[in-house]
Length: 281
Image 1 (cartoon, rainbow, N blue to C red):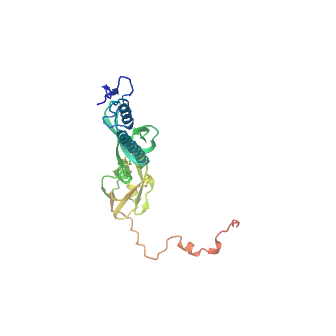
Image 2 (image 1 turned 90 degrees about the horizontal axis):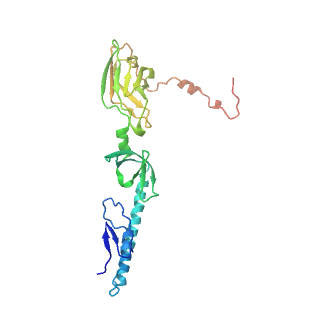
Image 3 (image 1 turned 180 degrees about the horizontal axis):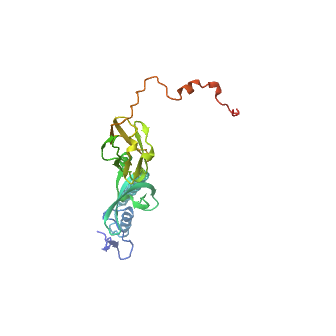
């Protein structure tokens, strides 16, 4: 059996220093890389017994194995890059360590991918992380469901016109890209005057003036947030109005014209302004 060399501190050496190696952090893996495989093959050729050399077919077989290993590693690297590029714009969770060495998780949106180095890295919240540290990828609908503005509790309020009072509603304004900072209220398909309510942090304070013009009955109060999707919550706030002096609006019959319909009917199609016409006094 040919002598390959001696092992010192995890490094393969021989008397002629034919192999030089640098100790690397393998992160606990025992994989044989293509560089180490090629070094072993060269060492084997240099140290074979001249009186009993290995057959050429054995070297050819080993070279074929090396070629397959290299192709598999190149394929794996290409797949890793493709996987990283597909994450751009998606919300992810990264496993990382803080300054004290404690493992923690960071969540955010992948803004770009750095594939120039040995390791593919993704850029999240102003920092680069190795793709190996990726813990989870979250669907946009799932992120929206947990980060969008919302009203968690259900509120049932009775407004007494003879003893008017207001209502305080706790709201969540959302997080990250789904956050809002203003709201609007809609009752009976009509916008509520902004002077009748205000947003104080996460508390929505609705004054009694909001319901003063409503007839007796039950109403749903819709909260519209100004996030990018204009999230609307319609089923969390219900108001019952009692002792109101306001007469209910008569139901609109089919065929009734709204204000301005007559003007539309009387418009002469020939009066449509044409390019070059002068304004009439």
